[in-house]
Length: 355
Image (tube, rainbow, N blue to C red; front, side, top):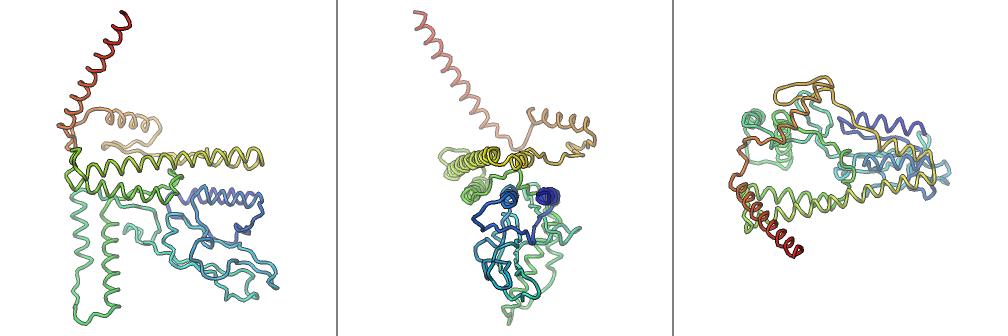
């Protein structure tokens, strides 16, 4: 099983910064009803890292096997292209090619076509990554540069007369690529880290998150009003409450599932048990540099001091434009009123007990 451990190590190393796709002849049939140590280890590798083996996804064209013997008496699915789960919906062509002669290979090739954006920042133009644009972090200068970049990329004229369907598709592609290139070169980005939330594998949770974000967007567009009669505020609070509830349930179910796997492995196979424990206790990469408030720390002691300064500032009252003083005063008054009522009742109950 050493190669499975090496595969886990390599995938964890490369998936930290890049979208990583694993493919090849795995010599394991995931559709087999019989169990083996190798099948269990490979299945755990896929599940722990939220990977989808492409030939098992819906929409596959071609035979249900990739290996066959010369007389076709033995058939099995041994070849896989494993893509991250968040890319599985972007597969628009999935085929097991059955036109490969046996004299060339006893395995059929697996063909997967992904519809994903290859455009990254302009310094690394064709790197597949998991960078997400942070529009809320963009300042006025970056937004102005974004508009300027679009003006430069779309600085051409078109004749709208006698346009063919091909011309429309071509101009549409130019427009989309220009928007992507301008955004990737000017707008700040953040890294999507799926390993931080491994329980996030539920489509219902994705839908709830999408609805909550939409409700929040409507509330922000309505000047962030906090009136209890405002429909946008009520909808946002309800969607947020529902999303958090489903998130807690998904996290709890994932933990229970992992604990049950460990318990079963401890009872059935002590080697698999220790492999699972080692994978779960594996810590993420430690940072060697930390920047905050114009200060940069590069060694352990200065990083700890800078973290301390960050948390001191975080828990200290700081003047901010987003602070709602009116809402704060209402909360303070309600808290004082509630405290007076509670103290009054406590004294009344105490007097009754004394008498």
